[in-house]
Amino acid sequence: MAGTTHPTLNDIPESTRGQVIDLLNQRLADAIDLQLQAKQAHWNVKGSQFIALHKLFDEIHSAALEYVDLLAERVIQLGGIAEGTGAIVAERSELPQYPINISSGEEHVWALSNALASFGERIRQAIGETDELGDADSTDICTEISRGVDKWLWFVEAHAEGAARTQARA
Image (cartoon, rainbow, N blue to C red; front, side, top):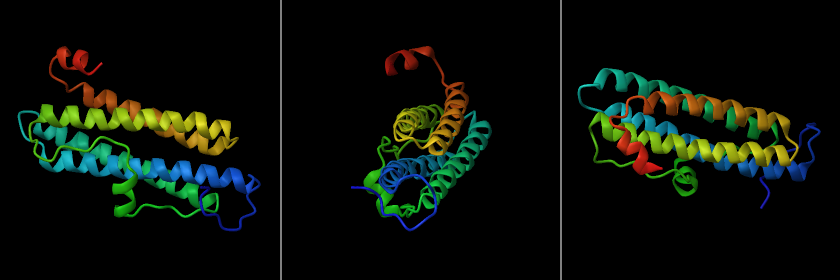
């Protein structure tokens, strides 16, 4: 079902806008979930790398907040309603559920790495889908987010202890 649209002079056809709104609202739910998972890691990390990871996870939270705003504002620009309530996010997010009972730096590194990788995969799919729909601006936003997510994944994975875990994930 195409997203709700409000009248706008935006020249992208309404049916296209509706499809892009639906797609971006789905990625918005993922981005909000990513933001919350980064804050969960920030609050709860313990261990010898505490301060470095505590700061890194907070930076990722801030970056994810920017992704949330980019996606939500694009939905509004297209005449839609940004759907970012907690209930909607809980229902729609496709990211892996963040484990609540972890505390070590290594555990948080792997949990947040998985969330970043999952979000990165979905935002790259959105690049292709928005491109196919002919919305270059939404494609550009998704590309910007993808570059950022890949950078954060690199930063988090740099804290991973042992290459065996990377091999096991592949």
